Length: 485
Image 1 (cartoon, rainbow, N blue to C red):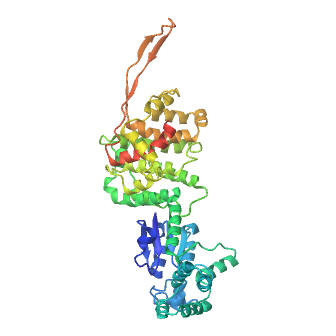
Image 2: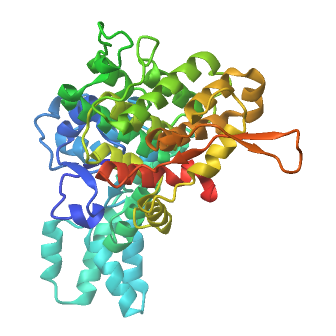
Image 3: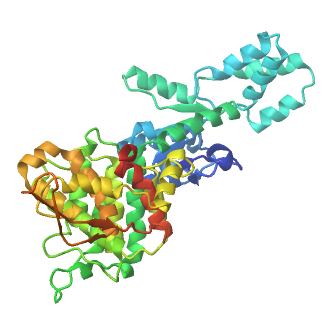
């Protein structure tokens, strides 16, 4: 997840607030406004300060004069201006939060009341520390020069009397007056509490599968633009004399901008259209092939060819319930088919793997990884189930193709069966089977009957031969074989 943090006085607290997350800090209002205008698609959440008075004042002079304000007065509330600009550009409200000094009406006055009326020394100390946050450096210096506690309290009280409502309080009241929900905010008056509140807010978004998928696709497209010399799509041409063509720049541009900033209420419809666009290039002029003896690329090319064909002929029955995991799976398969990306898992792939297992330290992932390493994939059990569908084919991807061509079977099996089949195809197309000849055996119980059998022996593929294959297969194992099926 990429975070835009607009704070004009960050100090050395970037790690304190955000730990090791991907954060871009902007300290100037005008720079933040330009970033929102030109680079908003690069960020998933925005954290704003309200008061940005350390910004360049001359640049905002024309803007401030439009409202009969001095640059200082304008910048004191300019975080709110950025909030409104974000909304105008369609950035989701729930993905914006204020991290600021004074977020509630009369917060300072309430702290002063505690300081002057409480008899609990710890409460007085805590309230004083929070109240100091609202004071300027000059006021803090003046306060330190006072030795008498009563004088200190009196000075702080005098500040409270003259203090108006906070900018956030005024803005929130204005929002409420016109029946608009005010923006979310976290008060920095207690750093530890604010840190915990911000971390919880960030973690909620980090668990959002839509945001993970969208960011993974965007970063994937951006990375793949740098890999055009590794494009091998032309090799899948059905006509050896006419290489298949892919306008990779246009293709990646469309995919990168496909999923909207705001999570759609009908996102399954978007996912279906995205997969249609993703698989569109695998048309009749393209056919799956084993290129440079690459068995996994062969599997991926078949998966995408099947996806394209099913989408073209039976899209009303299949691809109606796609999840973020399904879209990520097909995106990874597609790009591994058309690009030669080597043995390492790429950063965008690692991001998309989070959709299958949020942590590679989880028990679920470790268990599936061990199964993959030990080659305990339940190929035979699942093959028996496919073979007993009694189509004319013997290979799983061909059996699936026949089933989706049978309208009665298509309706009976349902969407989930065929999507799961696309996962199964990865395992069956990488792990080849040995087809032995028929054997005839007498039936001892019935002299008029003969058993004719054919043996299929599966040789499980070695998924540990590269970092990518081990991670990919381990992550998709549980969704391919739910509950050890």
